Image 1 (cartoon, rainbow, N blue to C red):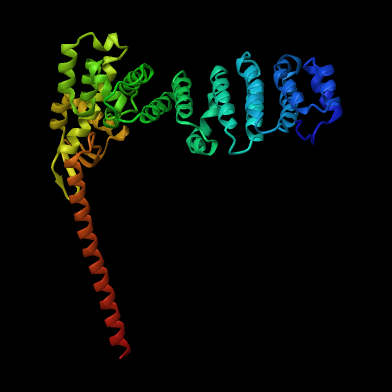
Image 2: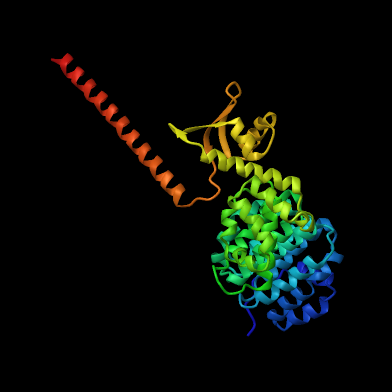
Length: 393
């Protein structure tokens, strides 16, 4: 049964068909009111527009195509839309911005709950990556995962898009941190399991671990280490996991021992030993800052303690403390006269039972202090009220 038709401007439709070199066929189908085949013909021949239309007119012509094809039955769109987007994605990187606008317009023409939006957005990611236009894509990513349930995306589909995003973002040094974040999101979709994970998942886990070690901004290794696919690497990548364990809770001394035992490991795995040493020193600084005794919520960390823990000269300690503050691992105030730093906050690398107990104690202390403060305020209010009453008498 042919679908209803509400938009077939004769002149524009004829020109569009001529650009696709199928004018006679389209006219025959229109005369027979076989509109379903008209939509199909336009969609399947749409790739011809990429060569037939000047770049400045590409968006306008495709908008006409989209307006026509969008009248097709909803059940037919999953077959029609790929016929439109595939030639665009597989074409050369020329005129990428115009092509991205076309895909964006196609995306916006679909109902907000349409699963086909997933297909179009996947094409946008691919085209943006191929044409080095990732800057166009990145601002939309924070909301992306909230669309998955709206589009009715299945788990395998969400994994495919998340992994693709990690891959394309990883090809640009500017977006390496975001690439790592998507690797973690991908691995989190797999539950903790004692069974073997698929090879692709294991390979992705190895990639995530190596990314975490390489990226200066990554300082939280405990969450990574707890992921099921990462845990599974203990049986297949024992040395790599031993190194990760050092970055989870070890120190400079442990790292030195590892490199002594495995002198070629860093080079064989594409790591920069100097960069790894810098990172473990910063993490050791955080642990050392957490370990000093607290006094009224603040801790004093001697330069000599830092020098010994980080295995650096005393003259370099202040620089390492500044680096620790810049990295966000610690907050504090340097006292150059007394050769110490007053720590106001330090990042716990592993948040276990001991850390929960410490947090509970601090919350209790804060609660008691607040009660005392409220009592002081209440007493002051009562005293003011009594004084006012006496003056009135």
